[in-house]
Length: 254
Image (cartoon, rainbow, N blue to C red; front, side, top):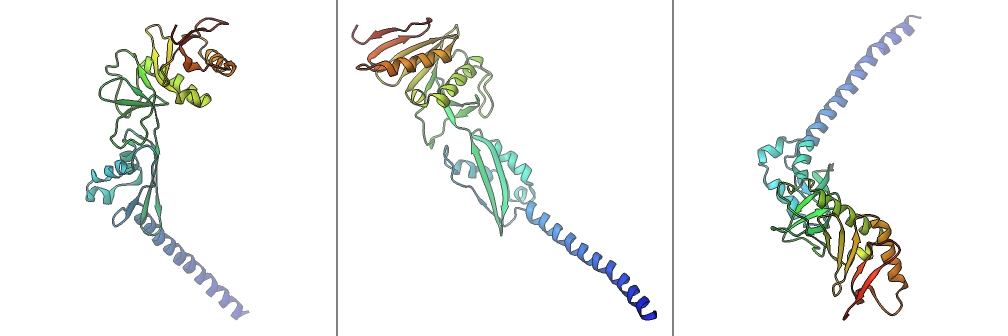
């Protein structure tokens, strides 16, 4: 009986010490991990390849941060620095063992060029993007005749121009549902009465879509294209779809 009691007392004495020891180890490990996670000193930054701009554009953002600032900066703060770039829609930063900081970027993709100086582009959400010398693909439709853009164009911000946003909305629709037509658009114009006009790359051909029922008129245009046997859309100087149940067409040379 005496031995059993002594054994129980020893066990009850050792158990709290073991718990304390394990807790201490976990606490030290947690502090070390926090220090590793948030301390960027002696770590290498890695940017996966990008598709819109060369990744050197984003790497250069780190050069604007001093070594002292970089040592104490938090991931959330670094995220904000990266996302200040006009072409960055979102950034994800993560630690990779043993000393790599991975910075993955979701880029904004230009959908059109604005006919203004300096050369400016917009994405499908209307965000304003500056031109870059190493832009990888500048074969984009031009938004022409879009009126006064003063105070509506700030790089990295969404355009406040109603006309630009309307034009971008239609381009986004065409690109999503009729990609072959989008690729053949040279210009998209918006008149003072909000009527849409497309100018195709080939020859060129003007297509008047009007102000209302634009989606159904685009579908009518594509059906008209399918029914053409010997001719092509580009055989016409212009196609006018602004009237219900008819297409007014003028062939070249007439």
